[in-house]
View 1 (tube, one colour):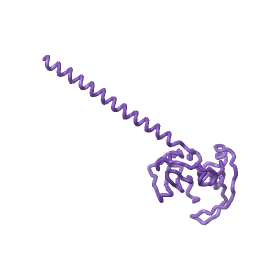
View 2: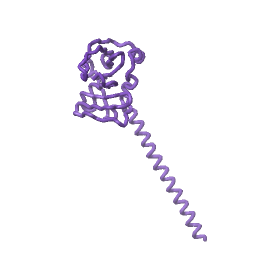
View 3: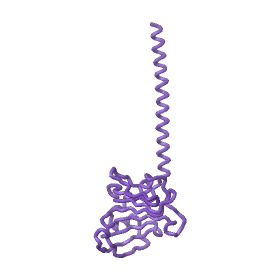
View 4: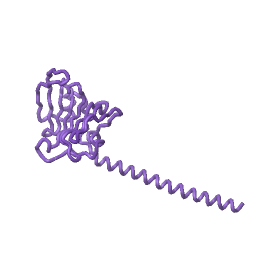
Amino acid sequence: MKKALKFGCLGALIGLILMIVLIMIIGGISNNEDNKSEKNKEQSKVIIDATQFSRINTAKLVEIMGEPESIEEYMWLVPSTGKEIPAKTYIYENNRYEFMVIEDTVTRMNVYSGKYMGYDDTTLKFKNEDDLFAIFNIKTNQNLKKIADTGAALRYTPVSDNIAELWVVDIEENSFGVAKITYNLNYY
C-alpha cells in the first residue's frame, strides 16, 4: 500500500510538472504569435483607407479629403460600350491621390508614388501580395482572384464587397508606382 501511494504521488508530481511545461510552451507560442501580429501591423501601415471611397458622391469625397487641388473635366470613353460620358478627376496632394468621378460617384481611386509622377523620390512599399491589401485597409473576400501577374503588375478582381478591382503597376523590388482601386467596373 505504501508503494502504491509513493507511485501515485510521483505520478501526480510528474503530471503536474508536464502540465506546467506545456502551459509555458503554449504561452510562449501565443506570445510569439502576438509579437508576429504586432510586427506585421507595424510593417503594414495603411497608406489610405480605400474602402471609405467606394461609390460615394463628390460631397462626401470633399468631406473626407477636403477641397481638391484641382478638378479635371473631360469626356470618358467607356470601353465596353464605346459611349462617351462626362467625367471628372479630383486631384489631391500633388497628384498622389486621384479620384475618378462619373455621374457624381467615385468609380476609381489612383494612388501614385512621387517617383512615378516625377516630383520626388518617394515610393510606395509593400512586403508581399497580402500587404498590398493591408496598406489600403482592404479586407478581401473569398472570391478574390489574381487575374494578372506580369512581374511589373498585379491585378485582382473581385476584391471585396465594395472594391471591384485592385491593379498595381510599375512594380520593382517591393515598391510600386501606381495602384488603381476600382469601385465600379461598368465604366472601365
